[in-house]
Length: 148
Image: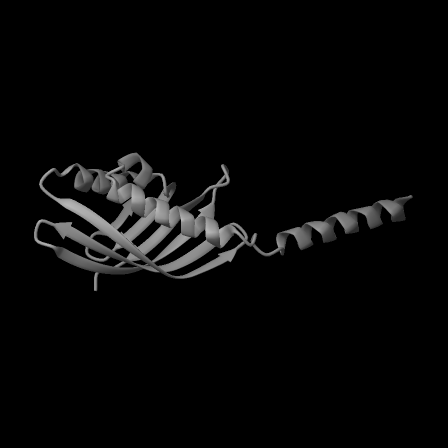
């Protein structure tokens, strides 16, 4: 009986190892791509709550020249920009690569920000780290970006 119990435990452990080693779902990259496109639409529509929803509450972001910012600081910056009636901001998105491994993903991308008036354009390459959170949604937990 003891041998049977050990065998059963070994099978359970083997199943757990196999499950942990399973690759990400095929549609995870598509989900992340859709989240980024939705963020672009929300930001461009001045939807502050929608734009902040892409970020995890555990966010740590680093934009060259601005230093590190957490979720609250990053969303405050987004809100301030979108509340400015004298200027409009429009982001364009170019996703270079999405790599998914289980509940983590890395996205290499370039944002192009246009600010009016003045037609100021900023090209911002970056790297976003996503995690699938408890609610099943992919959110950015870390990102680094810089202006070219």
